[in-house]
Image (tube, rainbow, N blue to C red; front, top):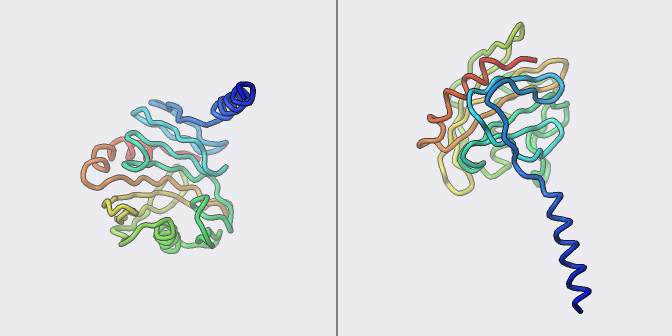
Amino acid sequence: MVRALALCLALLLAACEHVAEPTLVGPGRVALGDRLAVETPIAWSRLPPSAPSREAWTVNGPLLDLLTFTSGLSSGQPLFAGLEGSPPTFRADMSAPEIAELIGATMTAAGATGFRMIAARPWRTGDAEGFRFDYRYEDKSGLEKRGTAVGLVREGRLWMIDFRAAADHFFQSLAPAVERIFETASL
């Protein structure tokens, strides 16, 4: 009995060693994948990856603020991994308004309600013209969130940086750092 308990404990400890934990990133220049790079003026916690083309950072925890990087998402792939059913997917021929609709449909599929686009405008990084969207929604718990996303489609792939946070305080407190990240993004 003692031997069996010791074996179970050893297996449990071995499994715990492989649980990915957040890692600190920044401040400074940060490479994301093989093409996207940004400069962050503050430190963030990098969350374990949910998909190969996706990375997420947070300062106060993902329920309060989340900065996601989509790096070269291929046509036919969803923005979020792990959604049940048939989540909406990116298409290489999508226009900026269609990508805005994709963000809204994806957030709704993830449990958001009341998704509404507040503003849409062009965004530029280097020599590439892209898009920028500002939006609001309520998460599954009813917390009002604000979001802003920038991105572009290059070589048939989606490159996007999306920030969303609790609307009451966290969005405004991190907005200057996020703006710096948007300004310095390069492919």
